[in-house]
Length: 332
Ligand code: PBG
Image (cartoon, rainbow, N blue to C red; front, side, top):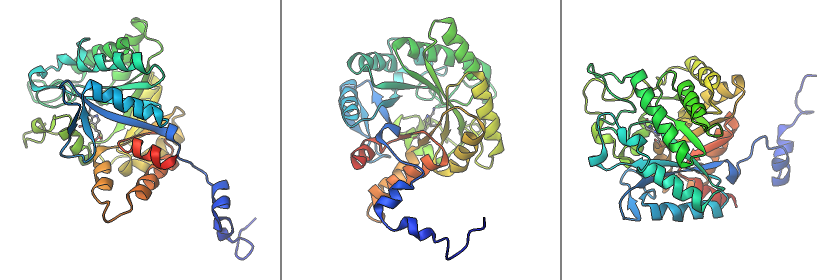
């Protein structure tokens, strides 16, 4: 059958809202949204973040408040990102697996008060290290792969034992998923989900996040190794992302994550087409800021919802977004 005009008039199915809804291939629902939350161990309930208008660093009290708000509007998952005070940062980031630390404490509180809300914790050392890298740095200035993995395993285990539903390695070390999975198995944490940041690109769109978690002053010093390009993927590559995704799936990841979203829609599409496990996307801090700070020039709500739906169309089943609460309200 060859389609041709006038038998085929594609505009027929675009004529009204009802027809458009019936033929919609993708939909955005509040249950697709995951809210990233910055937490700190101070008393200030909400601390403004200069680089991210309307996003706050929250105390544990602030965290409980936002968790309740999220749950009330139908959001099912939070992703926690800690801001660690300078006196607790070390070169090896050992605070990352202190079971009395900020993240384990926050997880325990959340699970106690909101047992049905999924808690996702970040596995990476950047908030905990004096240099701001996701791993530990060797004498030559390079981030050490295998030595970092041993610490990540302890960090992931500590989070799982505190009750995290999902541990999410965002560090991009080679082979860490297999080791983390083995560690969880050995310690009877079989139910813990691993969401692997499988294709995480070295992106400039993370800059506001680094301000939020206060790892920025330590990176970008202009010295060799002061950015993350020796472990995060280069933006020029797409096929390499399939190797990353397949390795992580084979090593025992339950969910893959692509990040950033906007500049990686093709990567989301490629991975979902070839690796048959769920793939999420992270609409990162820079994407948020672009939408947030142009609201006098662009219709914010419409542009946010368009971006999120496009990410779903690319193949993601869920999206981490700083707009989760707003989007939930707009969708209801
Ligand atoms: C680091 C981490 C980063 C983000 C999440 N986890 C930043 C980085 O790699 O430097 C960025 C998220 C965002 O920009 O919103 N483990």
